[in-house]
Image (cartoon, rainbow, N blue to C red; front, side, top):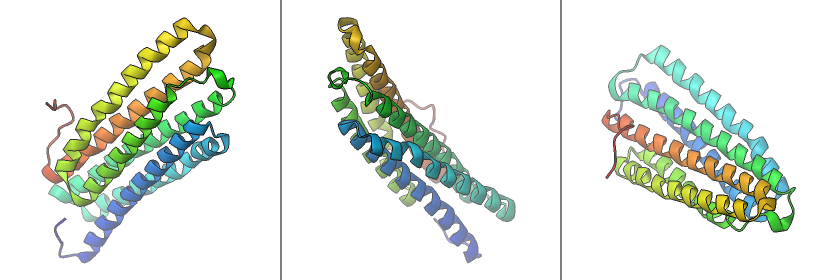
Length: 226
């Protein structure tokens, strides 16, 4: 980020950037806890994740207020305007990731009420997807701090792995429900978790696209990556 004659503007931009980065670390932490809760069907941890979504929502409100304030006061142009708009876009995606993580926690709470034998082994693939997503989120937030578009593009490619897990898990769970109708309730909760993880991947990809927008001014949201 280039310097300005008004050093206070640099400080303000840095402050908004740090707020967004902190929001990203909160979402990553929430997702990590959700993964652990899924492994053990830990009710207390799932409740913590569910209730922790309020923190993410509060951070989103704070970022929005800062962005609106800076645009009104500074009337930024070019890369500075893109950074502020990008911060707003990223905070929206992070807030939605928080919503999906809360939804995962709610499904875990419902899974914990089912007979142990009906909670399928497919959750191991979902736990692996959680780990992949956490790395994606951590990497894309570092890319955001460093204006690193190479890493942002690499994160975009990794979203395909999450999509593959969703499709494979969906097929497996549908087959299992046909073979064992008694497992339908548990299987459906795992499908909802898989879908929520797919959406987290989509939002992470959106963040990566916004990192590119901030640095290059390019809108790659509808580009096809070979």
